[in-house]
Amino acid sequence: MKAKLFLLMAFFVGVQAFAQEAKLALTPPMGWMSWNFLADKVNEKDLREMADAMVANGLVKAGYQYIFIDDCWQGGRDYKNNIIADPKKFPSGIKALADYLHAKGMKLGIYSDAAPLTCAGYTGSLNFEEQDAKTFASWGVDYLKYDYCGAPEDVETAKKRYTKMANALRKSGRDIVLGVCEWGPRKPWEWAAQAGGQSWRATFDLRDKWKDKGNGIDAVGVMDVVDRISELSQYAGPGHWNDGDMLIIGLKGHKGPSGDLGGKGCTDTEYQSQMSLWCMLNSPLYMSNDLRNMSDVTQKILSNEEVLALNQDVLGKQAERKIKNETWNIFVKPLANGDFAVAVLNRSEATQTAQVNFADLGLMGKYEIRDLWQHQVLGKDKQWKGKVDAHETKVFRLRKI
Image (tube, rainbow, N blue to C red):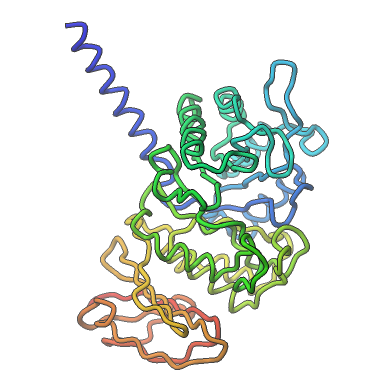
């Protein structure tokens, strides 16, 4: 009888743990991340100002919730080995920042590493997973970006270290989303969800450029990320997302991490394509530009609620790339209400005329065609024909008629 009771209790504990895990990040997380703009100069004043700007610019209303503190916030450990924030950068402490954000209806993300030191040489969480998770929970943290600098290259160690932190977060008493950040060499899409992650980076850090031109293995551009994530649609869904790294929209060659290795900036057309493609591919959306000083075009790209709705669609189906050649990439994404989103990317260096027959994409019949960047219905047809500028991505929502 005792054995049966124990098994029954274990079953309900397991169900409860699964339910807690399953409800996290049912749509891709959205917010602003500090690394590209602030790097090691991250501080509470700038973060509060970014949060204020997100509210004032309507970005919170559009769905962006988080302020993500990236690397370089740490001030070591206290005499009890509790991780602490740098008192000069965060004189009020992390909990005060979390409280400030929560009062605005926002959330806080933080950063650590599965090794003794982070990528920038600050305090990591290896062997302090439970202690750090409890600390993060006590501060009111809602998300942890967990990096992999300084850790062994083999996949089994990565699985163990991420699982250990995921279990620690579950035990912390607070729902904290885990973002796995090992950059793709160990194919995290195959195991990160089972290890307890809700998203995983699929590539090395994205630089502020359209495509890599031979600057090195970690010199990734927008098209390099698209080519990787486009092949991983089977792994994405509610609570587990392929992460394409930060939005570089509006950085314009800003000096810092995104400006390294050829990151000299993109055109507004290319930035708009990044938004279109990240939304179609269900990547988490982490802005990284200066939200306090944006152009009207940048504001428009980041706050297009019709395009953002594709990313946040509750069905959670990542778009599939149906057509792939040197000129055209065409993506199809099913939506919860029965509509389809279609994105038409011109990868060439010149304006092209596209003729897209919906039947060739597996979409039979006639559709109402709505252009999500022009915010207008173009007509009702079995196809779309039109010009697409170099590096532009047209995005349509199709409703069957």
